[in-house]
Image (tube, rainbow, N blue to C red; front, side, top):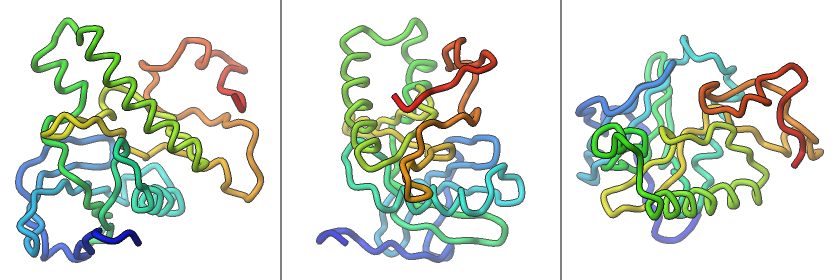
Length: 197
């Protein structure tokens, strides 16, 4: 563990959930207060009963997020189970996702200079993940988050894959994951998909 990293508590009694700030098919994200540190954090509550992934995939996502050490990738401070929910405690990204920002303030889309900046930071995140054997597989505006200082971070590892799962580098991923409306049409065709490149 790096020096200077806090040990966040792994008990729901140490967090006060405030308002809902996002949701997905099987998870809801809340702005919350970590009471011992009096710090605003995000708590992702993943409903284990409604989750399409198996427990190994969920464990892998939480483990991946906790081991991350890059300024452009969301890391998990800690995770623990509360009733039928997995709580993942993360930094609070005060400005929300790029999708949210565009819907609220830029209905015609970002200017080219903003797009270039966001993509540069996102590519730094992807390069880091790939260098460590991870494939994100769901990069989209809703998973690119901005904090209160304007830092861009890639989040949501719900469909990520590790290229070193079995110890041997797997040559391709043929599973259909992610958000279909963001995918290239050729990926949706029979025999489509991504190869090892």
